[in-house]
Image (cartoon, rainbow, N blue to C red; front, top):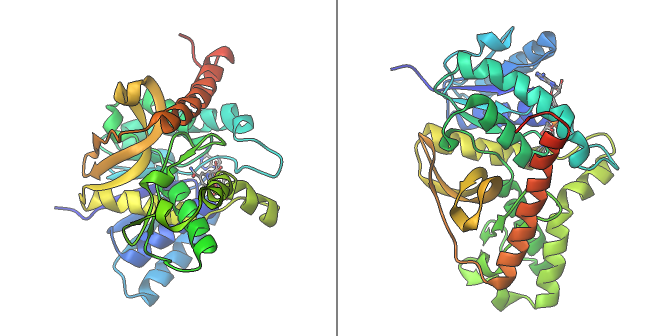
Length: 316
Ligand SMILES: NC(=O)c1ccc[n+]([C@@H]2O[C@H](COP(=O)([O-])OP(=O)(O)OC[C@H]3O[C@@H](n4cnc5c(N)ncnc54)[C@H](O)[C@@H]3O)[C@@H](O)[C@H]2O)c1
């Protein structure tokens, strides 16, 4: 039996940080980097390999000269794409990144036919839709990263408000990875204590708003890119759940097939992740208010998907 192999397509800030996280945890045998700029990938691979040696980990970091060389991977993470720059909405990126995703996926589906694919590029939910459409695979094998990140951001803002509990905060965010994401205070706890017992609704609503703007706040401060440490760690958690078949529940962007009343649209929902990818979609009981917000969020993703058709990226 060979060791686990993960490819990362797009070796910018997020991609290289995913590789770093995986190398530091030693959760896979080989990480293959694929970038258009092969020398850049080679430089990153050397640096990462040396970091693995420093950490006394066995993970080997290699470079694929072409996408066709991304062979027989267990998981393929796609971070190739343009980052969201100041003033640029996620929607502006749609057609540009959809073409990149399409080109990447059409090679990967042949070179790594048994992989689980984790799209990260934005606009995330639409990229999951493109990856699924291009592969034609079962939805269980294409799951997008966003919900773990958004939930971590919410946890950060809960800590910032409370001033205690860091590391014990469990937050839940559903919906698309956009301005209409749905932070769920009712499903959030600190060491098991409901958030609603610890904070007033005014305070909670402030946290909800900060969570929605969490990515934009970092973009404004960095000025030349977007967040990558938390996105990378969130992605690595998903990779590791697949590689080690942990059956953990994480919020991920998946194609809905009747769950929550929606079909043929991608949204962030809690899923159980195992070796086969999404092994179960969890249907939480939403109250009327949560239901309404989730519907709005799904509607925003649907608009992005519709835009792929109205702009003739796809035809019906
Ligand atoms: N889903 C999320 O929660 C989340 C979080 C953070 C970032 N993102 C998205 O992830 C993507 C990467 O972000 P980043 O900060 O690493 O950006 P980055 O600019 O640092 O890296 C993107 C990389 O993709 C490469 N690339 C472009 N086209 C390619 C192709 N056809 N093949 C291979 N590589 C290609 C670029 O050369 C660059 O190195 C962006 O789309 C960003 O918006 C998503």
